[in-house]
Image (cartoon, rainbow, N blue to C red; front, side, top):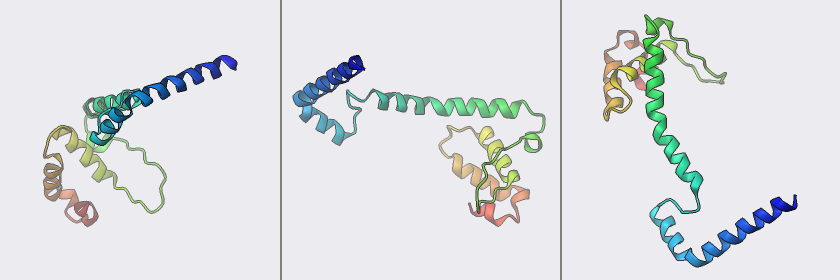
Length: 131
């Protein structure tokens, strides 16, 4: 226990000395929005966020490619929520179109919205069309 307390004390002292010496630079960094030199976790978080989209795109493409009829065979698991009504057909269609258009397209939302208006299943589903 004493070793842990010594290590914590050393780290706190090191951070204190660093901030005491560089406090003006740190304030400028905070205002501009740069990553602080002491915040390694923030850098790792942003890096993970940056790598998340290609991974999700790959997993979605793999899942849809593994099925012969993805619009009928895809199983979606929902959490139990009160008041929320989900339509499996709408979610199947959204995932399928997202895979076809690609997640990195700039106008992905507009393209999918335009497709929803043309999609025959959603013709009378006003909730789906309005969302």
